[in-house]
Length: 288
Image 1 (tube, rainbow, N blue to C red):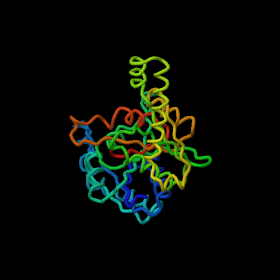
Image 2 (image 1 turned 30 degrees about the horizontal axis):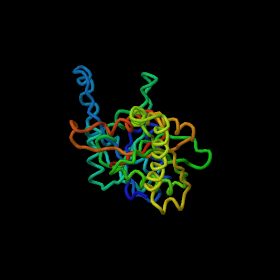
Image 3 (image 1 turned 90 degrees about the vertical axis):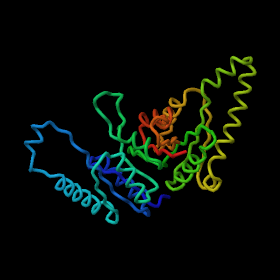
Image 4 (image 1 turned 135 degrees about the horizontal axis):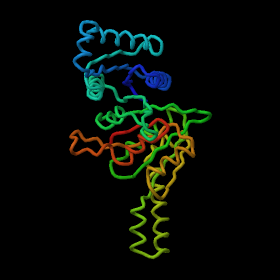
């Protein structure tokens, strides 16, 4: 499925669970365990009191020893990399130099505000690194796994359907493909035609979208797994989250737009960004 996977480790329980899941789910992939040491900004009196007690070199060696110990227990064959610098930039640099084709991070729930659940580092990594990024959140799998692929069917989004089909086959999961007709489209039809004509046009649009969405999943994948295609009406993020909840989805596969210049980038797109922050399950973003 993936030849080389980079797993970011910060020694939290969440990141260790993500490492265990990755090693178990992709046993034949080459793994790199990566830790980025942040630059700690402290007041002058704190720096003075710590002066000479813990050097940056000692801190790096300590982190190296800890991550090597993790590798011994979970994936002895994994490479271990510890670097100093901004985590997102270092993740991007190590992913490029190692030839990784997937980056795995754990989502951390923040407890400052009830609605502030998403880890900023994970979101920035999804936004800035031009690779598939899997944000891991554990779910209780009681039976067959379920993968959800929301598709907007625009030109260039074909890699999302291909990835969703391949990973569903790899996981032995059922696949739900979802396309949402936005309210703006429905509003335009109602303003331009009668109620009967609007409903007739919507039904034709749904039928066409269903066929197009199914065609985005590779034929060989459709032959191996069960694929359900759904076309809904309404607000895309709400429809995605409702489907995740009602179907017990374990993994959402979504597209993200990657642009290197920050002034030209729109944080992966409105729908993907909101789903990343709100979904209670793992999310895999695919560059398109």
